[in-house]
Image 1 (cartoon, rainbow, N blue to C red):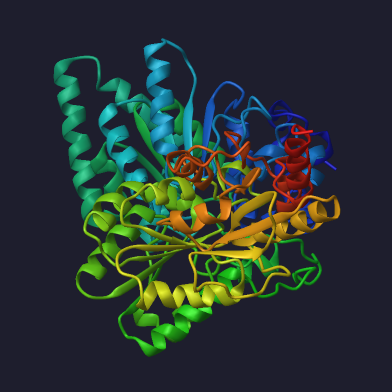
Image 2 (image 1 turned 180 degrees about the vertical axis):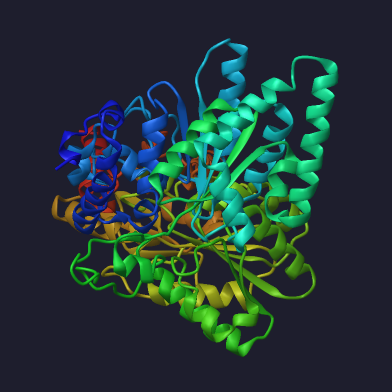
Length: 619
């Protein structure tokens, strides 16, 4: 096994070129064996095997800077940089992250969990290199849809004008860039990837650069060649007009040509784009046929491609089905997603109402602004988006939606702790920023029944912007519908009051039962609406309580707990033990939701322990 001998990129560079195809084959088998057990991003990594090997043949990522975009393409990179033995812990508590993490390795240049930022980050690194008079290469590996995000174009525009030498590697797997077709692009691509061509071009530039007259001849010839190429092959001119040297397109699974092209890109000056065509899911038939299904997948049987645990109904699927049913009754309802049709449960909507379904790509800010325009003209747009990605559109939520009191509905999926994707993907900020925007209504269902009712309320009964936040996965034991009230008492008690919302209500109810067995009379209050808060109703529940604990899986700053603590203080309520049980200011790592709740004291055991400690202080 060649892969067994690879402990660092130096080992890759020491290989004979004839050994590289076997290494790529072993890497794909390695991915299959490991990701099928742990789950993770699979098809995107199968597609970048040769490209990643070529990068490590030509560059030294311990010194050169490689910025991934998006970071879920980094599994092969991790396997080649000394982390093969950790793959059994991939995306698990205290294990190997599914995204680049500089604390794991010097070869990881930057944390990359979201998309479209790599070009901007890489330009910052290149400019730092220039200002510090240092010498290293800077690359942005962007693809798998990341080029649909507007920030990528802001970065490209600035890089092209900067003159800085950096390389943008476009991993074009059909998710973000239309393929170039025809004989001429293929011919020019093959020509440009040959060593003799770029050695000749380097010599040619030097030949005509020694005097003003010779430079003028070179510039004239270059303009003539460029004009001819634009006439015959306009596909490459977008980047060249921005100021890049454009190389490609090139077959991303042809290792020798990849290495030649990257070597040339390394020797050039100024901004360079290397356009690489790859096949998402390459080498595994099931992933090749359905790369979307294997994009981010749970553990599966490698022989059949079937999930080891059949997926059940989830909050996402209930949301999509309910929205589709409502759209069948009201032609104003439209659905918007940001490259997450399946993840947000909107596949059923797209099939039933294709003319009212819009996928904007990885462009959440655009999605919100487009929804605002639709709402302004009388439609009812519903933007289903992961909580962590909604962060990218905060300015649009304020200026384009809330300021104009527009009826835009947000389905805030993956709210709270989400599990294995870790710190970049937990939805732990939406409570803070959504409840801080004037005019927003924020609803928090704890069951499928409540989600259905609250979505109907958001569509037809509530004016202005509305957000419905719900977790990843399915419901638990609690399946009631208490959505007619903003705040509801689920269990009576006198000494301690537990206040929470969403599916954490199950932890609160379990904790209350355990506290009762310990002789502590405990009340449980469930908030169905966290903005605007029904402060008067909540204060009636906390009056004369000795201990009030507010349970949330979000950060403390801007939390509901802080808002309620301030309201209690204003009302003159004196509570001996006011406890905010949340993440404080800690970014939660990878791990299952249950593991993370336990680590941060957000499960029933943690609540019981905290309340008992507080009550014991009175004795």
